[in-house]
Length: 180
Figure 1 (cartoon, rainbow, N blue to C red):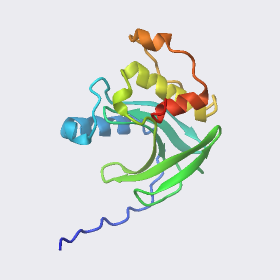
Figure 2: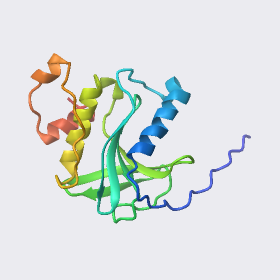
Figure 3: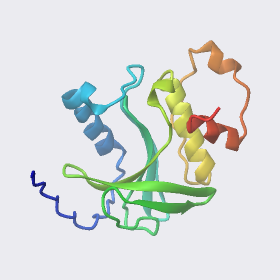
Figure 4: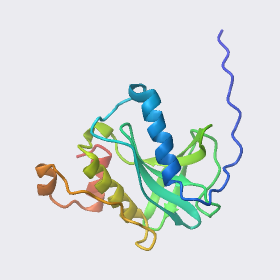
């Protein structure tokens, strides 16, 4: 019989006063360089970038894109959105324009964080311009304009994307979930 040692529960998340965008981007770039193709499904058209991190109710919200995921992050800033839960657990966070599930994660290098996955399959995101559009749409869909600092969105080089019809909010999220 093999014994597995359980990791100790991490300490409660320490509130961060500084904007987490730079250290998250640096962390995931380093992870990409050191672990690369071992990270699961990889989309070579994407790079690592953090978007739109801003405080809402005292905590930090923003989007991180990597070649293996596109997620909305919640980082403890000492506010009212954050709630400590064990890694792997899910909690629902009420945002101004809807409620989203967030999963707790603990990384020894960066500490506790929570994320909400934004796309069902990262391979379906054709390029960084589209990833930036998804990030901007998510931030605008769930947060008030006073909080959202829109990411810089480069024009799409994909002619199909420019001809795509406008989707309703429900249609947009159905597509993100992989339901056409």
